[in-house]
Image (cartoon, rainbow, N blue to C red; front, side, top):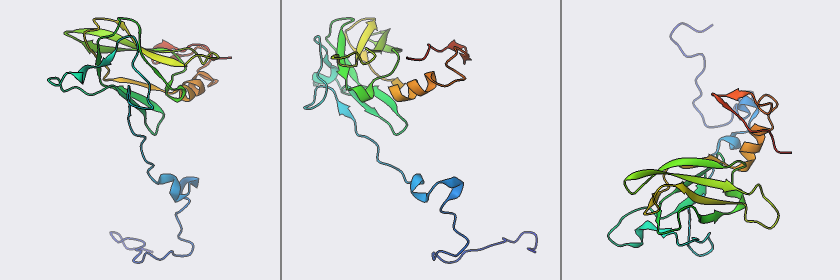
Length: 185
């Protein structure tokens, strides 16, 4: 019996104590809790990365303007993040295409800012049709003077497919006031 206010056990050694191993806490080995390295940012237009299309380019090509270049990455949770500021392109034409692993399963639209106004940027997927680059980023509305890509965050296709395939959600059940699209077949 332990007196009130006293610890029932104190470990004063780093040596593993028999029958006191919490390495399998919650059924997971301790290595499951080790932080993994984050993927670096991919800069659009850089060698080996997606190229700009339809006249689009980084807004900061002007030395007097200090904006983030267009960039993207996937975090450790499968969420894609697109950042930067672009300009000069054709209104609703593709800014750049993304590699397959950075594509959503569904199309997504995001409110963004442009020169003194608001616009919409969309990530459009081809649903992996044969022979086509799977998805692209485009400005769907607003002035193409410059477009801020901040806040363009969405789950990759694997996450969206698993949500769409969930038995409790795939039947079109309401989720936070929205109905999900039917699952892909």
